[in-house]
Length: 246
Image (cartoon, rainbow, N blue to C red):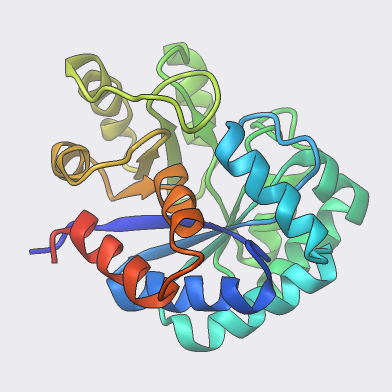
């Protein structure tokens, strides 16, 4: 049976038309979830590959209204949950309540905003709960047990487990320490989305028994970049199928 994947894409990367092809390839390749990043000029957790993709997306004309329209269009054919990922500055500039409501109207199921954590979220969790939008709070292996308990007590079905600290795109080793971290989260009954540097089929297989979905981001962005001169849809769809073990 194929493993459950959350696949990450950047809205408007490399441009609007091709980002629609990316979304279709991810869906048809078997992704269980789509994570659509709204690019920001200073992404605090992203490595150079996603930073470069965000820069190109902004140059291609991405704006938040355009991103919401793109999500709405993707939601019409996706047939699976969509999470919008971005950063606090972009969300706050639009207005946190308005951002959440617009995400829901666009057909997305949830948001991932790494720098709006529980307790310092500018009302994100309350607005999301009122709007029927999930928030997947991000935790890393260094989280203290009391903090983890407080985050999980906030409600919601999901939690995003960052398998290491630092920025995305670096080498991540799936070892006993990684699995121990996931086992710490397990008893709280959340749907664990685990990622940060996952790049291979072997890593997906190691993580899959311990999580709800394995998140693959930078590896796919890099693959999109490498496929620009070829058949992007066919190549990316095959890559997702390979990662999922279809």
